[in-house]
Length: 257
Ligand SMILES: NC(=O)c1ccc[n+]([C@@H]2O[C@H](COP(=O)([O-])OP(=O)(O)OC[C@H]3O[C@@H](n4cnc5c(N)ncnc54)[C@H](OP(=O)(O)O)[C@@H]3O)[C@@H](O)[C@H]2O)c1
Image 1 (cartoon, rainbow, N blue to C red):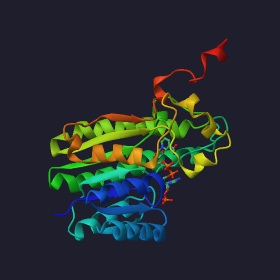
Image 2 (cartoon, rainbow, N blue to C red; image 1 turned 120 degrees about the horizontal axis):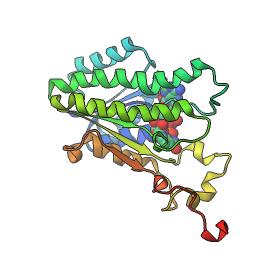
Image 3 (tube, helix red, strand yellow; image 1 turned 45 degrees about the horizontal axis):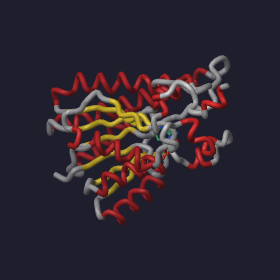
Image 4 (cartoon, helix red, strand yellow; image 1 turned 180 degrees about the vertical axis):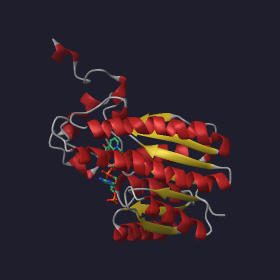
């Protein structure tokens, strides 16, 4: 049976780089997106570039029937999934806690916690059949230290840490591992256009004076997804240029005086 990976939110950016990382290693790739057309065209790009089989799926957030139908389709094609990478996220930006609409707040949880749970559980059923598999969550360093007006996002990313540990604990006996990658800032288009000009003060944020490329996150996902980490489960890998290591901005001591 050929090795396979499913990556959510993988039509561009971080998710696409993760899909490419596995394709480069010869994995067949399933790409999830809320936009079916984009999922199909991104899968074609991967198939053409790496000579693997790739297929796009329309993912309907928090719809368990949709989740089940995706995993049955994959099985009907002769696969039992090896790796699931849960990359898609509702970013819940600008949700001021005193005023945020509770439905908007819960939408963040529905995606980042509820839907990820549904995806992981269906993937686990595949993996149990061959007593082997790996679930990789792309969470965030804001699961550990928060940013402003993002209570739902930060707390949902924190919830993912415990969810991953629960899967590691409960599903280890089935040969299923579960681990988390915690990115700090990534060089996305959003970051390029950041209104706070974060790109001009990298040294303030990260001791190594740089933030992650898509490939840095993809390499961490590959590590957890592959047998390179065969004895590791319930673990976390922070990829943030050392941002969490410091308590204060990393500015010149002269400026503190
Ligand atoms: N960017 C950063 O600086 C940063 C920092 C720390 C952690 N992270 C985490 O790293 C992962 C990738 O980050 P990214 O910035 O590359 O992500 P992104 O581009 O903002 O989102 C990834 C994908 O998630 C899907 N998505 C977006 N909003 C959604 C929503 N409301 N509900 C469901 N799906 C949604 C989209 O895919 P479709 O439209 O194709 O469905 C999108 O392409 C995320 O889990 C993020 O939380 C990112």
